[in-house]
Image (tube, rainbow, N blue to C red; front, side):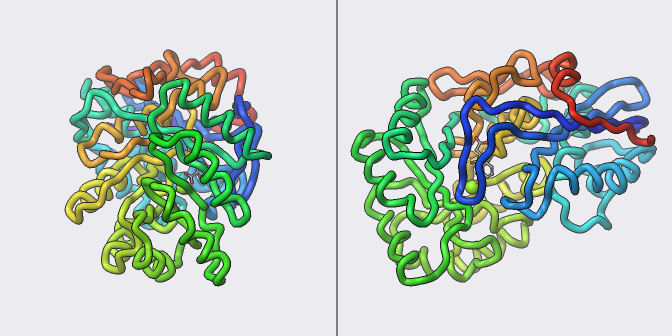
Length: 371
Ligand code: OSB
Ligand code: MG
């Protein structure tokens, strides 16, 4: 394969419902769609799903655009490769910038899948024909508003709900949701908002009595030691998200027993290839994994569905239907869930068409490489 042309499209989509985490609130998202063209004219799409601000990871839409435009795409264009596993070799010298790398690498995977006719899920080693989706709910203004939101998702058929928490918004909303939905698979995600004060540690320990499937990322990303210490005193498994950017991070987590569940995000780990390798490594250590989301538009969402078809993804993934976040997605058909179950596409490429009219209408900036 030989990529001859590339373009980046910063696309803005409004969210159907305001999403608040421990660090920020969002009404719309700007993600970068990557379009690659090869020498035969085939097209592959990828999505750089970085948030606009550096509150989840150090990257932003602007840094991703800069790095993709200046380093990643120039390294890829004109370089021959046979399989997408070789694509990251093109930018082996570039440290970090994993969201940017993930979006470009994803476009190479879908290009290759479309070109060879091998479905993306099959190419990644997927074995499931259907994947179970959970939903992630932001911090709501009141407990009643949260209960109404959980009810809406349960009515839509989702079997697992994750609640964002932060100091001051933890035991009270969790107790209320647990009381109203005693049988629901429930977990919480703090996005690293807790410190190690006695009060904050006590608030985290208090969550152990609600039958949660996991407590995701209570402490700061690099603080493996605090996660390990908390895990020793908890029955509920700790799940790592922001702590695990690389396979080395995963080895550290395993060595310290800092987390017993892993949230694998394609973006955070720098691409589908590393995400697959993290799945394999976690399986060797008996760690269940699930695919986390970054509110992906349809391109990234379809890639998450393909990844979630690998056998170690035994917990519901954040691959809820497009409609949970967007009224009009950039793919056709959108991702749909039937009682929380998403069918894995068997068609090559993304398994969905990219709706170029929607992309064009929602593009706020675009760039061609080489210029
Ligand atoms: O921690 O999982 C997270 C969204 C933005 C930043 C961080 C996170 C999230 C989500 C999104 O929870 C879940 C989804 O895409 O469905
Ligand atoms: Mg998370």
